[in-house]
Image (cartoon, rainbow, N blue to C red; front, side, top):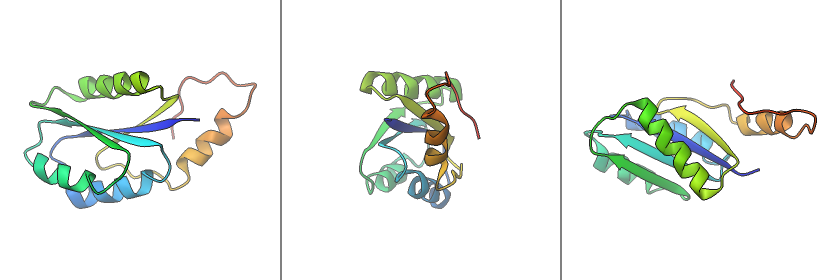
Amino acid sequence: MKYICGIVLYNPELKRLRLNINNICRQVDKIVFVDNGSENLSEIKELILQYKNVELISNDINQGVACALNQIFDYAMGEGYEWVLTLDQDSWADSSLIAKYNFVLEKDSLNIGILSP
């Protein structure tokens, strides 16, 4: 299965964001960030450029989390991803989260549209 992670950003604390990225980047095919007008955008760019398979969508102003989530899903659909994991900038995903989701998703008898921890 093809997974993308979408992370909405607004003035994130970079140390916590780095921990978040480090934990999830090994589990998904790509991470797309949507920045909602952060004042520390240049530092965010420096951080995420250290990783492979990342994309940054930058909004000049904070358009709210719903708009950012729509941008993530539009991007994911346009790129052909099957599943989207959405995280906050300070989320902490278990190192086996996607493996656990795969266990559920691979059951042919289930018709699943959304999973939540």
